[in-house]
Amino acid sequence: MIDPKSAQIGGAWQQKDASGKPCAWDPDVVAFFLDRCTARDAPFILDIGANTGLFCLLPVINHAVSGFAFEPNPEVYELLKRNLALNNLAGKIQTFPFALADKTGSVLLKIPLSGCDSGLACLGTPMRFTLFREISVPVDTLDNILARKRVNRVDLIKIDTEGCELFVLRGARETLRRFRPDIMLEYNESNTLQFGYKPDETAHLLAEYGYSGILIGKEDMFFTPPPLP
Image 1: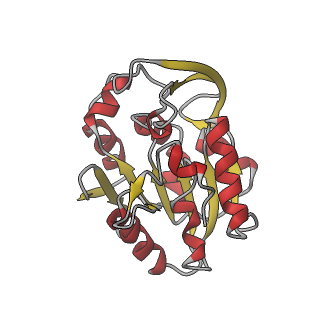
Image 2: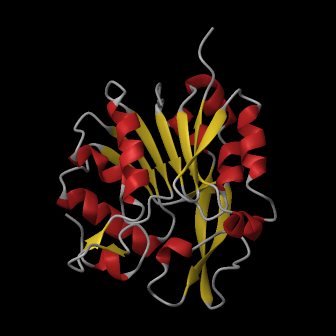
């Protein structure tokens, strides 16, 4: 179940099925991620750039899934919480109303004025929309948050931050080293150029930890760590 406004503002639920009802964006990618969850015992996931909720609603299907969800856009964040509540998942997924990067403090989030492109909001220099408003949102590193919350396990991470993926990973070096999670992230040059880099830089960073990746769908990569010795 989702709040109807989730489809109106775009993002996770902007796709429509044959009957015209809202449905998940990139359902094959979601199914792939769900399969990876199912292969784990009680997986703990991180949904970074959760929008109104899609990947963090997977506990509806696999009740063993739990985790954290991060969404800095205040309007979208309220819908995320609403969708979790509608599906009785507030106890399964803890939400955080801020951005993740490689620093702490505050950053300016650029939100399209169209009202139907919430999924394009970004922290970089917008190149996929021209009219926008700016709001200041809190930012922190993933390493800091997991340390404060005393998390002792992370199995899978999904990152869809409209180009900020490299900076999210730079702020998650201890997470990568300690937990060795599988990682699925958006791999889209039109987004990364909003931050002045190319997608391969994320692959190069993950390669430092022995990760290798495969293309999933049109613009997502799935990275796995090397086997334990």
